[in-house]
Image (cartoon, rainbow, N blue to C red; front, side):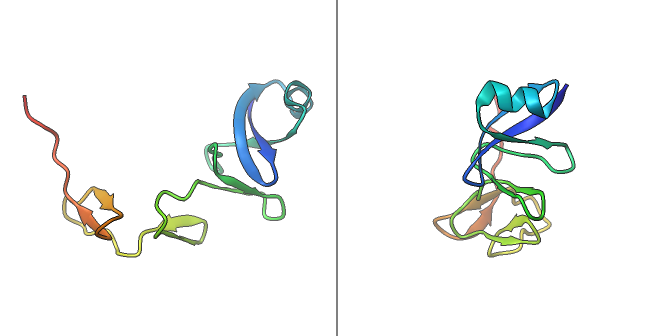
Length: 99
């Protein structure tokens, strides 16, 4: 069994597990491409048929693609900042509520 991304107009529209590429395409009626942990596919992401690389969906409008990695316009600080705030274009600290 292998993982396959269902591709339509270069966009990943679904994913499935099948015995072979032929089986995946037979079931979906669409172009499918095998993917792996090293080159993961995500619904809403894209597939470049020339480079054979999947790109994850853009997480925020302000982020840009650099070497196939979505990158924030501000470098994430090394402290505890762990969430991007698109409105303020800053990294913020989010703490888990205590019980």
